[in-house]
Amino acid sequence: MARTSQRAPLTADRVLQAALALVDRDGVDELSMRKLAKELGFEVMSLYNHVANKDEVLAGIADLVAAEIEPPEAAPKRRGKAAWKAGIRHTVLSARDAFHRHPWVVPIWPAVASGPHRLRFMEALLRSLRTAGFAPADAYHGYHALMMHVLGFTLQEQRFDFGEGGVVAAASRFLDQFEGEEFPYLIEHMHQHVDAPTHQDDFEVVLDILLDGLDRLRGPG
Amino acid sequence: MARTSQRAPLTADRVLQAALALVDRDGVDELSMRKLAKELGFEVMSLYNHVANKDEVLAGIADLVAAEIEPPEAAPKRRGKAAWKAGIRHTVLSARDAFHRHPWVVPIWPAVASGPHRLRFMEALLRSLRTAGFAPADAYHGYHALMMHVLGFTLQEQRFDFGEGGVVAAASRFLDQFEGEEFPYLIEHMHQHVDAPTHQDDFEVVLDILLDGLDRLRGPG
DNA sequence: ACCTGAACACCGTTCAAGT
DNA sequence: ACCTGAACACCGTTCAAGT
Image (cartoon, rainbow over all chains, first blue to last red):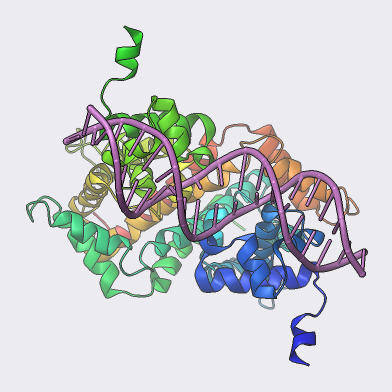
């Protein structure tokens, strides 16, 4: 019967999948152990047989997002002075896509524990840089520059996602209180945001600045 | 008497200052209206005579952080092909310092409403870029690249601030479960983090990559 | 105008009890 | 081994009552 499948035994996996669905749908602020249990058709305390606590749930769903990131190609097909860029570019864009699909993960990303998928992604990106010829110190800079760009970009971008509470609405509400002449450049900037609903190009322009800059750091090769 | 000064009448300002002190001391997760009221020597509901709700408190203290950011110099002293960089560099480093002093603000930065200080900072940074000769579209990219760098960097950096819960401890705990050979590059990276307790140089290396890249975007001048 | 107490609708998590 | 109910120590916020 439907009820039997509804009550398939709880597993850590089912808990995390349900949490991911809930958070993708309602946002991370709406996740509570009680709601999650209700969604699964169990009582709250049943969850604690499969996950230690709420932090573990958050770390778990963050790692499900990490699992969606495609690692850089291990063996690039074409060789050339900047062949390394293609693989890195691919994985960074993939990370951007994953964060874009699950924007709630960005603010909690630094706070939650790193799971296996995330550690494997970090390893793959670092290996890519090092085998491309970056010295350890430059791979260190490159890794951070790229990750910060992805995280920072998505963090920034979120502000424009919610209609009423978004920065555009809030700022224009605020700007109304001032003479129209006090913030001309900010107003110009807001219009650019409103006019460009997707910021993919914006993301890639800066990504290419970073990749070119890193290439120069790497030295002639 | 001491009691009188302790019970100086509540104001929105006093509420925000106490909230900032509490959050700087204990972290943003520890902020509750009840604790905040107790800290001030009033009952919870008294706060609501001066602030609308908790979101307004968060927006208020975020704007206090924004107030600490020094705007770019309006009139740079020395002229030259990249004179614009000095002013921008100054304000970006100042923003990095402010976020570094108040790291809890980074994850909530995109979620809270923009206050007057933040809007003035945004305006000043955008004006700097535009008057340096950037076309509107390039000022748009430059603004985001710089802000993302600051936000992303501080977000990333936070992970290494808390001893036990930090990524180093968590990752090394996790890595213990694997053969030591599976994550050689990640282990190298972790050591670099542990060896460099401050990431100021790291921040500036990438900042200069961005500034140089933006300068090229701006075209010959 | 400002402060307060009780109340409501929530949280995460512990612990003892069931099967 | 897994599920549950009651209980504890918290939340933010509404509302009516005080001064």
